[in-house]
Length: 282
Image (tube, rainbow, N blue to C red; front, side):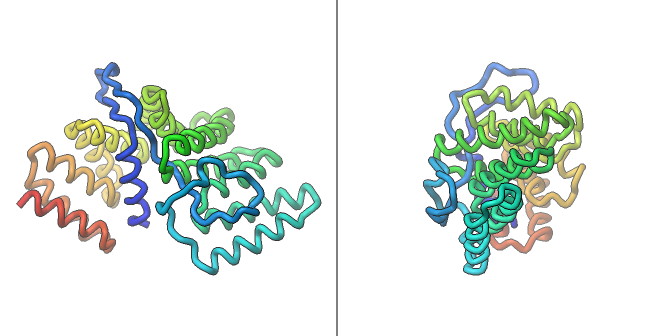
């Protein structure tokens, strides 16, 4: 959903450290600010774990529907009533799925983690890592981002230990480091991903966003141009390529791409952003 993704992306860009990501200069790291990560809106106090910092807040998550909340309540009741360990672990996955459906990703991560630790397996740890990472992308404070990023890394480390070629997991680990006190470690990991697969969409997109964040629109344009070559239907990549070009004096190509974005999506929020950028170029 582009609207939700856009909200998360705005948070990411606002909080990410202003790192310099050009290939030649690794020395220009600015001080770390904070990260994007997740809030746990609408949690019930009896969901079985302490949310800590990530439970504090925020309107970044989509509000769960009454039907989703009912499903969540039912899954939580079944989990709480279970006494057999094996059944409880199976129900932990069901409960995690319900939390994920309700956009309460920190709790989803917690229960996926319980299931992964009981059963093991790369896929189980990947689901836990993905949920914690999704929570991380909505975080509203540096503290919650740090906690959620660390949880995501711990899950992904279990994945990468057995499958170092899981590049999506490696890319997400990189972004949690970029939002930590070790941003250069994240940049290094993103470069490793692109060295392994120069067409990796998520790594290209994140490197482009980081270039925008550090004001390097020429570098950003390179990343996003490559991304839309790999995937011509990448809506956000096309938008940010246009934005990068607009900021490097290539207004005519930027206009054409902004208009292309409007034909690629019927998202009214995205259309409004495009119109705003086009107005600046006219």
